[in-house]
Structures are given as structure tokens and as C-alpha cells.
Length: 370
Image (cartoon, rainbow, N blue to C red):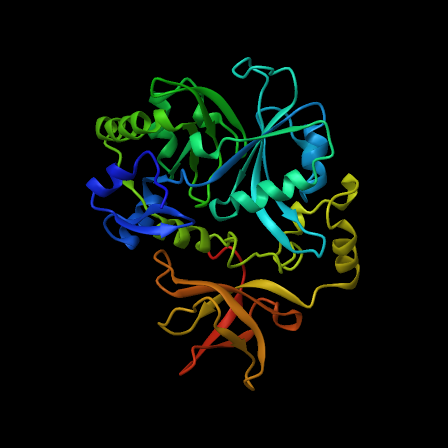
């Protein structure tokens, strides 16, 4: 298994380590509930250095990205980021990703040409690289920097108070989905990005692998000085936090067989921007409607809906399938997401989730859950 620059630190902290996307990653340090609630109330730091990062640069770099993603990249300006997906020709999703338009601030050689960073899911690095390369008929160069790039997510309502003394970036006025490349904790050329996967506020920090230990240490030293409750937080809480906010997880809620329109991602599918991969299929789907829709599920029981559980109507007919589920640490009730037939997508619809031995009464609920 691959490791991150902080693996030894995680082990020394007593983290429960698991294999994820080929990496040895921390699942929990103390308990999932404690870590989850601390992010909602204070601040947690996640090592997510397993994520993939590609540089796309050149005169036609924007043209290439515009063709392979669903969103309208022409709306980006340097210092802004955007959420998008890579559609395939059958309307499915190759991956979801973040697109960063890097500023021409002289920190990279050849910074006079448009330069972007794509951040992709760890399990899809090789697949995404091959997919984008297969469509690169443009004057654009791709560079895979995944192996040398570290990523920390500092998330929670007190995150900005924690990091403000560590950087010259005015983080309190850093708008959502914008970023700056700056010095952080004495480390140069760190991307400080007002993004995250928890819905709790905060930033993500992209840095060279060799800088990561210093940044991690500085965060905890600053927390001690400031009296801020900072906890190392694992992938377990990352999953429950994103689910409470209704954020899709690739491989569960979105896959090569689910379209962005079915998944409620029409807001990142811009049909007016010109041609892009899969546009014809998605236009037809928009005109004809989808047969199913991803919805939120709240269970009237104490059992958690699991990925793959059938969703049924009152008569026992299968009308869909659960894609994600957990016991919500914030709400204290089981929640999930899943695809249901269009006639059941209305909030308040009563459905049943089959566990094999038991049917759990549930209702379709509005996303996010909180």
C-alpha cells in the first residue's frame, strides 16, 4: 500500500489505519462521533493526500477542460475554483473533480500561459488521466503531480480563526471557492483554498509532500496557543460529514452508470457552453426526463440503511437502491441517499428499505439533512 507523508504520525497518534484507494489511511483516531461533532463545532484536520492532482497548461488548456467536463470553465478567473464532473458518452460520470484556475503570479515557470489544477478522486487517478489524455487533441500539456502533492483539509467553524495567524492570506474574507497561493506556517507556495467536503467551513491546503509535516505540526501548535479544540480526523467522519450535507461520494452515489441529471447535479451541467463529451446524451435525457433520481432518505428506525439495500414501495415492489447510509452523529437518526423511481422523488414520499430480514420504514427528505 502507498502511504502519505504523515502516515507515521497517524500511527503514533493511535489511528485505526485502513486500506483506501491503494493507500494506508486513518479511519478514526478517537471515535467517529467525537471527531464528527468536533468538526461541526470546532475544527478538525484531515490528511487527504491520497487525492490526485493534474496540472493542465498551454494555450488551449481551457479548451481541453471545457470539452471533457460538464461545467462552464470559461466562467473561471485566476484564483477561483469550480466543481464539475467528467461525463462519458453514455451520460455516466467518469469522476467528479475540482478545477483550479492558477494565478499567473510567477511562482511557476512559464506562468504566462493558462494553467489549471484538476483535483480528482484517489481511486480514479489512473482512469481519469487516461480519459483526459484520450481527448487531448488541443495545445495543452498534462502533468501528474499526485505523487508529490500533499493535501490537508482544515474544516470547521473555527478553522479560519485557527489558520489566520499562520498565513498572510486574509482568510476571514476568502470567499467560498476562491483560493490564494501563499506562505503558510513558513512554507512557501501553499494553496489555501476555501473549499471542503464537510459543509462546516474551512480550507484545504495543497503543499509539497516535504512541507506537510511542518504544516501539520504548526496547526496543532497554533491550536494550543489559541485554545481551539483541534482534532485529527479520519475518513470515517469525513464520510458522515459529507453525507449529512448530501454531497455525493464517487463509487456510491455517482458512478459510470449514473448521470449528473439523475444525481441532482444539473447545476454543474451547462448545456449553453458549446460541445462537450456526452452532451448529446444529456440533452436528450433533459428533454425526455430521467427514470430515477437521487434523493435523501430518513429512516424511522434505529438501523442504518446500507449501500446496495433495495428500496421498495408499500407493496414490496423494488423502486430503487440505497447508495449511502449512516447513523447521523448530528441528528441522532439513520440517514441515507439512494436512487428511486421518479414518482417517488417527492419530499415526504413513504418508502421501505429492505435489509433482507426486515423492512425499514423511511421517507424521502430534502437535501441537505442539515
